[in-house]
Picture 1 (cartoon, rainbow, N blue to C red):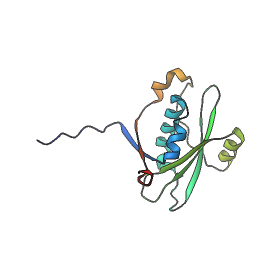
Picture 2 (picture 1 turned 120 degrees about the vertical axis):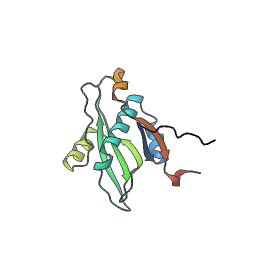
Picture 3 (picture 1 turned 45 degrees about the horizontal axis):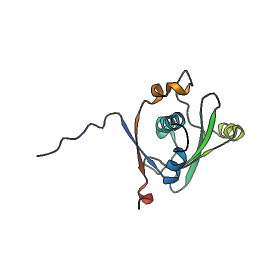
Picture 4 (picture 1 turned 30 degrees about the vertical axis):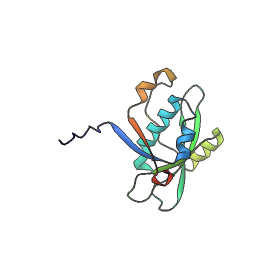
Length: 134
């Protein structure tokens, strides 16, 4: 008896290095969800540079904004692999704005942590880069 394919509608597949996942997991669910939403929304806008990692910065708007920088690798005709995530200072984020190295912000009207469910518009599935598998 053949098994039926389960629906994958509404699921997002993204590729991460173990360091990225480890660092992301140290933050609140609000910050994690917001960063993942921003990455998904900006995935097609990230430039391709074969063989070289790149950096992009972003902000999670909340009572105390969370500024971050992400290192990623995006090869031609492939989805990006996110390598690392670090918290940065406001000055570093402003430099990224000047250098046009920032993520497009999510459209939202409030920043209260209690309203996280309204921002979680995707169901994420984290997959590690094959090279990170043991």
